[in-house]
Amino acid sequence: FWQVVFPISTELAVSANASRNVSTVTEETILKMSQGIEFPAEAWEKHVLVMDKLTDYSEDTLNIRTQQIIGFIEMLRKCEAEADPSLELEKKDSDRQKTLLDQVQQSDIVLRKIISDKIKTDRKCGVNLPYKHYSDCKTAVLEQLKSGDVEVDKSGLNEKLLKLFEEVLTNHNELKG
Image (tube, rainbow, N blue to C red; front, side, top):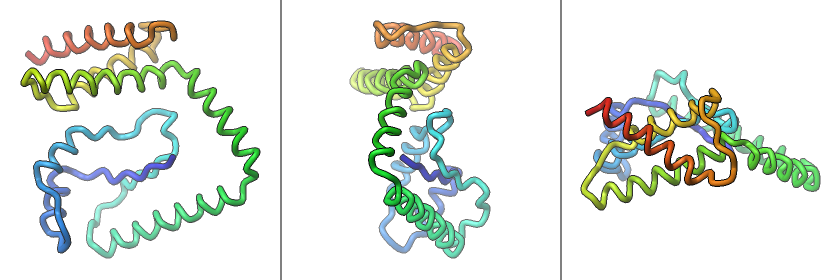
């Protein structure tokens, strides 16, 4: 899949939302989303279009950028339609196998689930930490895996990652506290 990312400050998002002529979202929603958003950073998220050079957020400029994105998507659709479907299926199967074997990506997926469960549990207990707190811990665990400081084989991946995440979270909480 492809992602288009517009990295802007929370303040600008709130300001732009307030000046819209059409329906707006609540400031609370924008603030909550800004805390929870996780920008693509890993090599497997290679199909990302980051609009980071944009300094003029006028309606005209945004319309031009929107047209660029639409043109980009149309080009992708055309390329996809012209591709040999059997080759595409083989490539997808090959890519899927590579993905399944990639330990860091598997760990990332498991950690996202662990974080989701942790947030739900914490909220039930009245603890409401920002998503970034958990995300920082996930990043620390992934860095340990990438650097080879920690090895986790596929058997018992969930349990081992949960234990490692809890250790990092405890250390992170002690540093913050």
